[in-house]
Length: 202
Image (tube, rainbow, N blue to C red):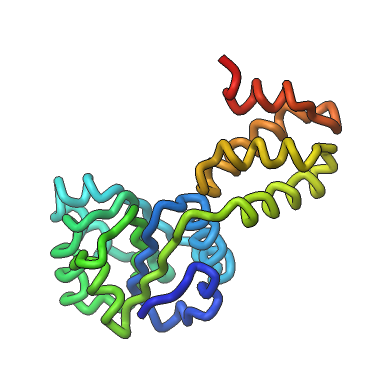
């Protein structure tokens, strides 16, 4: 099943064990995944890189299949997913593991991608696409941030920050974090400060 990134709240997580988050907007993906974890109160979260799974699939399967009597539902997060993981997902699905949820974080996937098609066409799978944010969305996020932190900044300087981020919310969040630390003991930031902080100066 296919969902837009703005529709994640419509997903009935209790009935879905496989979720694919793909696209080049890492910040939006991380925000969505973290919100799901918080809303569902997941505790037993295990994180893997695709590379380590492919290099040693036996250890991966041993790890996900081992479970103590007192362990709650297990959550598996796999990062940097590519087409190479397709057979592993098929194998996991064939084992009919009902008490584990798999969150796959992938970059851009082509329309002909076997992995993408698997998640789009299977009613028991969920596929969410994350396209780059537009400048309006990023500007709104930045404006809310500065308002909450009570930092005085002009709209021109917000645009300066947003233009540096290339449509990626993760980049914006990184820049805002730097500015927050810089403004720890001050409540106003100038253009020269911003240029220096976001490395626009030579």
